Length: 485
Ligand SMILES: *Cc1c(COP(=O)(O)O)cnc(C)c1O
Image (cartoon, rainbow, N blue to C red; front, side):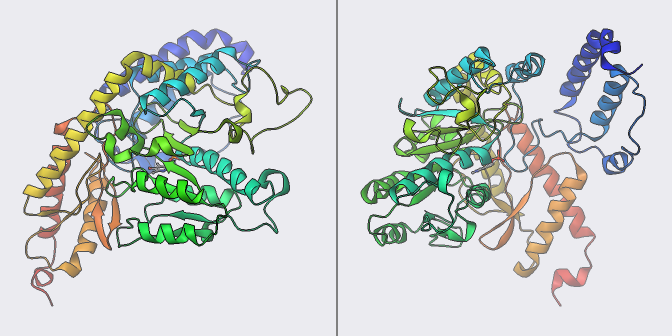
């Protein structure tokens, strides 16, 4: 029989199997190829007809572990520099196992006092870690996108009230537009959030003064002045994804105060600059915002998925997210109801991993990790700068290094195509992963360092592998293209 109830004696054996496989996987995660060769073919063969009779848990988990060994992207390892990707600290990972074991539903206190209390503590510890004032409180969500969404939903309700309506109650049809002003650094997920909130992507004014997207502060002042005291949302970007640069948050806070706008800071990874005295000035002014968002599964190194939304004024924490039904707690429940502050209703106990990693390593542990990453990024920037075949394209103030391959003798107009090819070759090779982007109109690499295990030697591998693959690419090129047409 394959009824799970009839197979419940498999439980212990299956968990032991999973633990053994997890340990083996994690032992190799630093030295295995980031993407094992042949994984696409292997994965294409998975699927087919739904099994009629199950084979039981040990067989299913054994098969899953084989697929993991042969096809999992080692993105939790120290040589994955694509996107902005963290790993999972041992404390966070073990807590995440227990999260699934306990299977708490953190709708409200009544469904999980443990999950609710640890979420309160986790949010408060994060607030302290990021040196945000005590008025800030918040909620855990699935990531930076939902953290932006949650904060911008509060901003929408704040703007709507000042314009005489409620977005959550009345909807936005027929209402005045809510102006959104930001720099060219605005993240794609903030745009997605504004689309979901009915504010609309096309309604965002990106006030950039150059091709990089840096804020035109004068245009922001003029834009806010032209609203004649009407409400607006200003989005400041703490950590932009191409080079880890920051908007001038303090100056934006001055303008938001002067003209009465809601200032939201998207600090998905950049908020972690505040964890070290060496980098905290970059994100100065975040403490003056109305809302601040950040990611847990990036630099905090807890497993997917985790983000946090901080909102300063308690009045705006719930607006769009309350829900009423006879079986749910009343809105004025004396106990916390996190589902009234978040997009999700049933909610995973994400707080357990956050709590455990902060309990295990503390503020000083996170400071040490962030400072190591600052050093690793600086080391990578100086190596790239010293190599004649590479060109550093921007200063690296935080944990992202933006550069391109520029072998001597290759004309400028061929560099974009070459860097694109080199980027593809790097992913194909699999020893180390980094992605490409467009920086000031040029194809560039933008490795981001956010994994707790990453050390200097790992970024040396990146430079060495790029050099080796680049030389191979040049060897394969027809000679006439080297000399021009
Ligand atoms: C990654 C990122 C986000 C989105 O976060 P997800 O966790 O991917 O949803 C938002 N803003 C910035 C600046 C980011 O780097």
